[in-house]
Image (tube, rainbow, N blue to C red):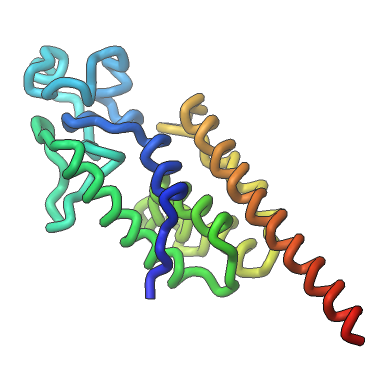
Amino acid sequence: MTRATSRAGLDLIAESEGLRLFAYPDIASPLHRAYPNENWGFENARGIARFTGSHLDGSPWTIGYGCTRYPDGGMVQPGDECTEAQAKEWLEWHVGEFSTLLEGALQNWINDEMFEAILSLLYNVGPGAEGVRDGILTLKSGDPSTILRKLNSGDYLGAREEFRRWNKAGGRENSGLTTRRESELALFDRGIDNALTLYAAHLVREKGEA
């Protein structure tokens, strides 16, 4: 059974992604890098002269709260539009999809704060795929990612150090991603603190019963 994501967890992803009612090119794509100051996401791309007069690639095109693929499997296309209600529906669908992937990859239990911090990172970066690209679960080499290996070995302090490594777009450090990683890391740290508090209470209780 897929773990339910809290409202705070959904809000973290939604606020980090931002809402765009019009499809926009990926920030690391040739199109966006060539014309970064266009009004991408806030008006239909087919009405932006830089798009209509360019042959540069903008994929993967994105809409709503970071959605690149619709629930029916179709990919977001330039010119697509949505309502806020649709964007929220797609967000919840994608979060459920990624939550299932994460649950399947984890070999150790982690609490909700830690889980949702990793989930936000996964939503943003993607799971990765062998022979295609590095991601939060799988590297291009086919090996599990460092952060996943550390989570599965119980090295949670080591896992937290991996968050800041994922702050680049197109090989360049991105201030927005750096800020997002810090928000996710703060949530992960709260999870570690809560886990340690519960463990300390357990030790005290065991000592009292001895």
